[in-house]
Image (cartoon, rainbow, N blue to C red; front, side):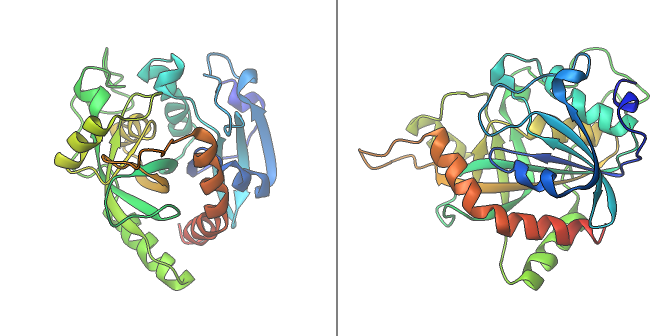
Length: 266
């Protein structure tokens, strides 16, 4: 395997770092750093805020494999391509996957800077036919028809809640809606998402969670609420990627402390 040519380390925990959150990878000890471009068939990110490196090493004394940046469906990749890194993680021995992202807050009780544990998701492109498991099934990874009733591990969510409380802050917990992007949602689309029970919306994470669950991995998802996705916004409100990155930067210390404390207990 191409990754093995660059690293002989044996990671057990996988972490995917979303928009503006890549700095945690810079603190990994004894890192083997592999640019995405150096791995055959590996999808390469084209989005600002995603560094595009695979980092394998130790974090809080635990062997980790970190995607410093991710690729998205809206960049033109297929669901199978954007989830290839998760399959590689599993082949390398990763059994627990932590997914982070930047998301818009639909729940009226949320505010920018909140952290939300994902307890369930709405896979809207998947429902419409763009499921990453579409096509021939590889039985060595998982079953043809995998159960998705508990994609996000309840025990990991309880551990995250307890860890955040020990650190002195609270976590929201809600349903993440995955949309294709790259355009942000219209007011009518946000009203629809509210109606079907979404608390936050974003353009990533869910395909990776589906593939990880298919492969028997434990999954924890954490969304940084970077903006309010209001169905009736003020007339002068304009959402930008720069705003998303800026709020992400402000939340980094809290999210980093949470991830470090969590990883030390896994």
